[in-house]
Length: 68
Image 1 (cartoon, rainbow, N blue to C red):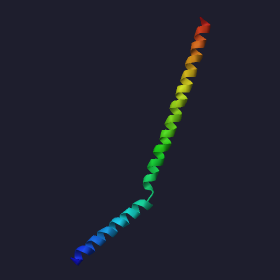
Image 2 (cartoon, rainbow, N blue to C red):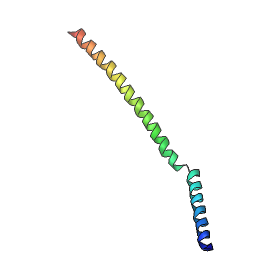
Image 3 (tube, helix red, strand yellow):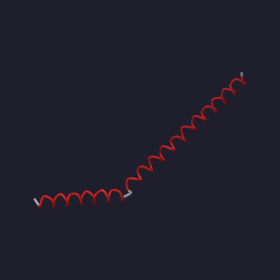
């Protein structure tokens, strides 16, 4: 019975050590930061394309109507 108690304590400390190790490592944060930066860049690019596309369409339409 005492051996089972020691095994349980050993497993508990292994789990605590694993959780501490995972908490202190920051390798996974890099991926999240890159994902946030990519999403921000995509929002800026899509917004710019929509703005430029609308303005370019209006400019070409105005030029075409003035030629007629």
